[in-house]
Image 1 (cartoon, rainbow, N blue to C red):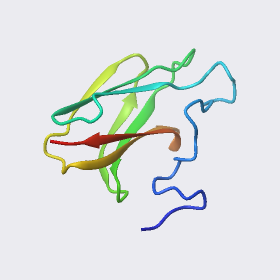
Image 2 (cartoon, helix red, strand yellow):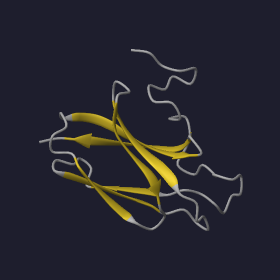
Image 3 (cartoon, rainbow, N blue to C red):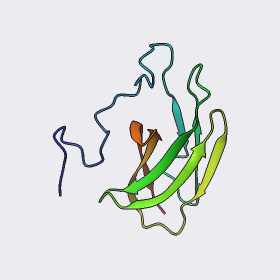
Length: 111
């Protein structure tokens, strides 16, 4: 298993859950993921304060394989992903702004 210089399997995992996207403390991302663990569908919503940009959401498995990528994720919109065909295990939802990971959340697909 390969890890980066931070010990992260997934690049960007060293970012904490109050990462400022544009350096301003009041502009922090909140990413709601539910249910966790998921069996049929996974729902997520981006809730950043005062940001109207769009982002890319990428789901990767524990080996770093990209499962899906959703371009142009908007704020305050709930997205639903079908996960029933994915193998049970640990996955990561990465939120990217201009191609740079700004937030990574772990979730589990179970049966």
